[in-house]
Image (cartoon, rainbow, N blue to C red; front, side):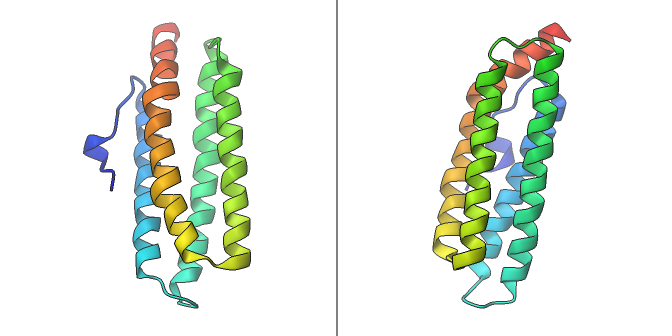
Length: 137
């Protein structure tokens, strides 16, 4: 499991704060999934945490996009498009979870897809974005 101490940091504090919060939320969801069993009361908590993560992602991405716009970041639309795709995929996973309650799928999505995506996104797009924003603010 990815730990904050090992997570790649960027040059902008608010982005690091958002990444840390997102990683903590994903870690908590992963732990909840491992505690859950079919029709377990933990499902209600998972639902709540998924909604909170979705809201976090919307706000997290909005802050980054505002910083990119404010500093005329040239590949703004490439970065924004990845945010939109991630939100769209997350919404589909939420819909599928609410319909199927497939705990194995949700666990794999959180632990593999989302955690890996967050780290890769931070290493690539967010590192470049943060450097640009830091130099042009």
